[in-house]
Length: 210
Image (cartoon, rainbow, N blue to C red; front, side):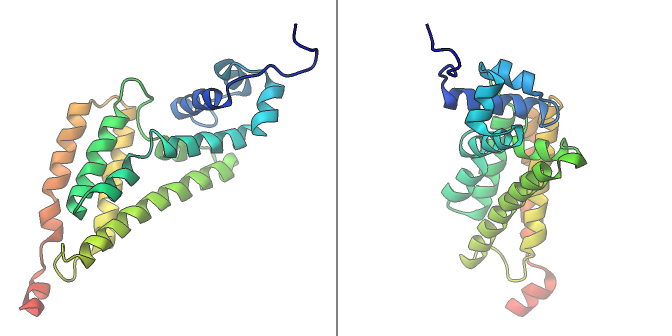
């Protein structure tokens, strides 16, 4: 028999994973402490002792997501040889992740930022910071491509990064609404068809290059 008053042992990593998926599906406000204790299989005192608070648990869940199921963007931007290939891999890998039937649909970070009420500004600001960090990674990958000579002189990299980050965010919302994997990849086909038009040399740039 367990000693009275001693918290029952539990697998912290497994409990955090269950909390992550619950927050991912429902958002911060949509999850109560009762929901968390039921999903994680622990009592409230054990939850507070292990994670501190609901917000602290949420932040740990976000960190776990970014290190695991949400790592597709960073992986694609790091591993592809050209900027174009990196952007396409980012979109296609995320499309597959967003529509994986074994996981909640969409991006935890993007959907979490949209679904967080103003009274939880600290949570919302944290998610927006993480989203901006991902946008920054995308822009830096394009800048690497520019340094390698992959774009004509004068290519506006900021709007290009903004366009593809917007496509990615839109895909997350469409995944939440039930868009299929095949439909996602058809959207990406069109997004990548726009690449050449957006990266073509402008007449002024072409003239100066000549």
